[in-house]
Image (cartoon, rainbow, N blue to C red; front, side, top):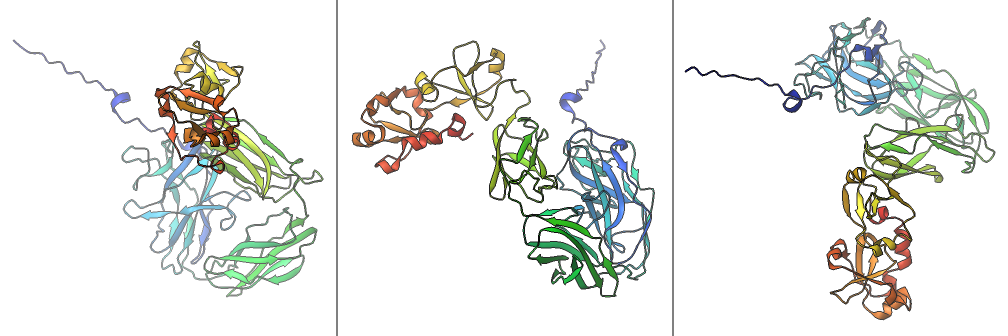
Length: 544
């Protein structure tokens, strides 16, 4: 008798195979085409790639691996290769203007440059540049034709590993998957040591049109010579008068000039310097205006586009702050700071107000709850904002801190951690609330979707409690801590002549919701009013 064996091959990739990474194609990468150029030894900020990345959704850049299709390498020609985010005027300016994200590493095994460990949020799109710094002595000529290779994820884990190619995002939405992105123009690294370039001079804390609100300012900037010689005759020109810049740090290429006795009105500022070979640089002039202004909290405005966000770290609330003075005029060049609750991520691309007095920032979070944002300028508090962070399945119309119930009689407290807390007794409830007028009703299925976080304890400072099997009387401190009142005289001093009427008995099973604290030996050890005022909500008392 023949045995017929049927073999069924069932492919259940959804359950047993690694989920394939998302991906995008070259349409998400706009190549701005770095132009043809000749680079010389000892020069920096040499542009070799210019591209804009537009992910399919808000995402975070984690790593980038690129290749040179030309002959230049990191042994003889390329000393450093850097990645920049476009900042300041549109286009590549490099040192002191664009935002430097880091230097690439080179792997000879895979003949590529890579930069990982990034964490750059891209909400819509961002423009990036790649530049090189050449060696002091270039012994042979090299060419550069930069390429973002077609995505190669060798182990298909969606995460960059050395030897992978392409652009890697935190969502695993990596690319490009259809083709490489090649720079059409080439650049040449010349061996000629001729230095005909003047120093590069940048002011980093002043910009054209800026309004100063002080009569003094430490002007700061960067200065570096492309020929790698020293900088001499470095001066700042203010309103046509030349002043020597003396605080020059050649190790970090930084400089400072202490500008004092600034008069109100417009001022024209530029920089000029020679390098060791006599090459000269003079920067374009900027105009700033000095005007003493006092910020008015009453006149200043704060607008937030939404007061509730989802806890995915991507959803955001945008806040626009408009600073105004006592005359209701915009106050420029003022810095704001934002103090927040735990778990809030604040993004401030530029926290100095513009000429219109406006400065904006974004708030994100991955933790649930009602968050507080305190917006300040200096020591002045402009506004306190509340931002509710919910889960994607949040119930419409229900906020953290609400009282909720379903078809049954039980009432729950909906806390900042997204859980509901039980009132074990009516007396516990009445220590926090006078009635049930604020209770919101939801469906049974909605209630069941909210997990129970625990029991509510008595509000601190309001009642005294004891259990039926123990004669001791306890005061209630923050976070459900019980403190024994050692004498009747002490109870009377703290709670008045009718202190005994404030004692509630709690059943033995609920005593475990509390923890024991230090005994109260004197009136200075405990204040019912103070602890009651501090426990402004159940969220606060539970530290949520």
